[in-house]
Length: 336
Image (tube, rainbow, N blue to C red; front, side):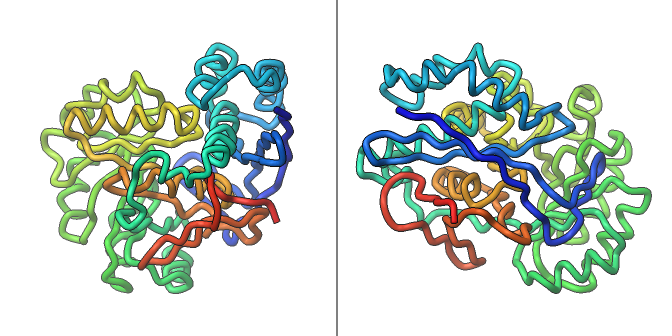
């Protein structure tokens, strides 16, 4: 088994702004595993909010290289367990390796990943398309550029309700709201009343991740369902979110890959919570991996590659009507 990786700058079509950062280029790390003529690809983007850089991701991969290249692991779950101490502070790097492991593992089995997992690709929910914070005029322009049935609207400004009211004038599409920790409990409860009237499906992470007392109030009094994102990063967070959120958004890069992501999804379902998997502006490598597990989900946010001006990979093709997977086994994404 050979481990290698490549670094790419992913240029965005538009400046992408959320409550705590803006960016025009997203750095990403593509991991490759090769053996006997087969290869597997995985990906993780950098993230300054979580202190994740190309340098600290590759440093972790170099530590685990002897284990990976020994070939002594028999499955992605084995490799994930062998690396969990190395990647304890850097699940992003573990995600990239875990995705590559699942890709080559299922290629060896001669199965697509969703086939190996026993999932039906006809049962994939329609992804939302994300509209970052901008002037109202530019946000409207972005919606007109990509006519989509579901939009995720990034909020966290001084005029959030005005933004949604104005956007609603231009489309009948479903809205999902993501405040990225920007509101207080009082604001969230008050905003939920108006947002419910404006065709919003749910609110994602309205409060700071540690504001558990505030979330108790929001969960009790909100007129809309609430979804955890920053409050649900790793497996141990799922149970903590029960009774505070109606749903969780699992980010594979934050959780450490598909291996723990699947466990988080199944645990949330067992607790009666709805599930979503979200992206972190990955290329088609990371997005295609998400698509394979999407049949498990109530909602999905896998529009990352759609936000790019240039994609270094090819993989799953997404339209409002269907998701088309690459030919052949594994996850199936390829660099171009």
